[in-house]
Amino acid sequence: MSIHLLTNNRLWLFAVEAVFLSSLIIGIKLIRALFDTLELINTGAQFIADQDFTSRFRAVGQPEMDRLIGVYNRMVDSLRDERIRQQEQNYFLARVLAASPAGVLTFDFDQRIATCNPAAEKLLQLPATAMEGKKLGELLLPWAPALENLPQGEARVLPLTGRRRAKCQRAQFLDRGFRRDVLLIEELTEEL
Image: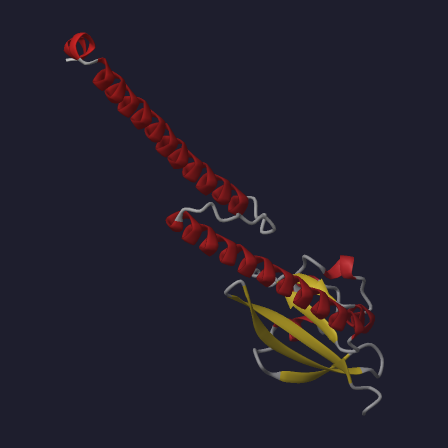
């Protein structure tokens, strides 16, 4: 056909070649847009895997991609705000526990002491390093077995060293969907 057009009508041959050239250019642009979309999705997935919630994407002018980018940006903003709120709550809780006059012992999932505040160190007369990672029964305290067997939600007054008395109560809280125990120790000597 091209030989026939070349010999009889050269202008039609140039028109067909122009259509082929424009088709090639449009095809390259479509393929490039497809790979840019895939690269954008891959980059977003990598940001999420790296827990980088500070990066956002700009709209690219394609309605479908712009909707996907909008969803990604809202999700990242929500995750970043949640992370900030969680860090603020943890910081606030750590400050409250450090300033609390009541002793607080938190336990891990194996009932080993995970944390203790300064008031607990003072009341139990043991440093945190000597308590953390151990079960209550492993502590060299005469009333440790009574604390270990204290039922959930119940409070008891136990003798400390000398004439000192403490009210001890076991409670639970949720951490990452699992129940963990916390032991509250409040000195009652002055009140008694």
